[in-house]
Image 1 (tube, one colour):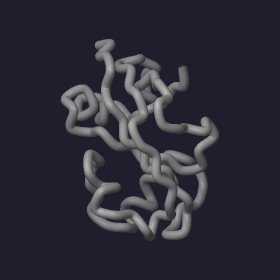
Image 2 (tube, helix red, strand yellow; image 1 turned 60 degrees about the vertical axis):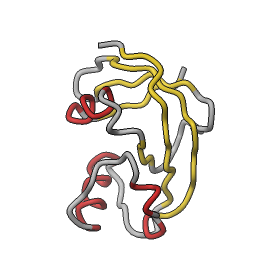
Image 3 (tube, one colour; image 1 turned 90 degrees about the vertical axis):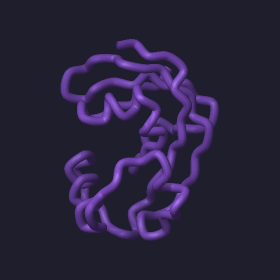
Image 4 (cartoon, helix red, strand yellow; image 1 turned 180 degrees about the horizontal axis):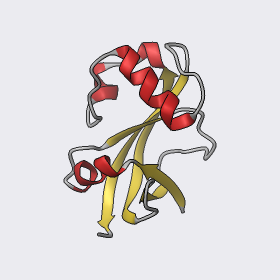
Length: 111
């Protein structure tokens, strides 16, 4: 089972079913539909849920659609998005960076 890490502040929205989309850049896990995922809090290593990928769409940051935002946290500006993802990945991110939009269904809460 593949593991996805999330910041601690995203655990509650995921468990409540409010966050059902994650964006991943530089995907090194070859994430695809029907993959089962173990969700982990990145700061603590706590496993908190199991989910299944229901859809995957690849695009670039400048081509995000309204549907890509559904179930995802909101950012105050494009610059905020790029800065946040640069902090996550420790690499430059801009409007042409490739991104995977991953919609998931929660299967089991672990905490």
